Length: 82
Image (cartoon, rainbow, N blue to C red):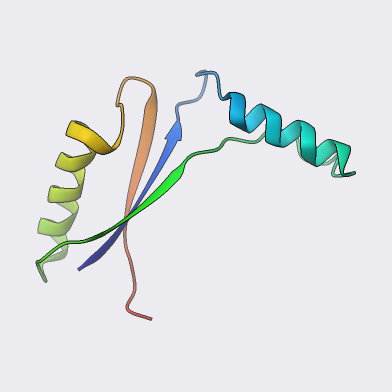
């Protein structure tokens, strides 16, 4: 099963990359952008057809390695087969 994990800094945690991106967007004329948070997308192929098991395993992986739960949030999405 394909799983997508989105990892981003928690609100209130400094995001230098997000701030730099926001500045660059404003320099390009996109003044309507009021906040940018950057992160990473991790795609996993987990050998199970059980959605609950895939979510459980991905959550364990996030807590142990893929994200730093102290300063980062993560979302787990089951990816569609397209």
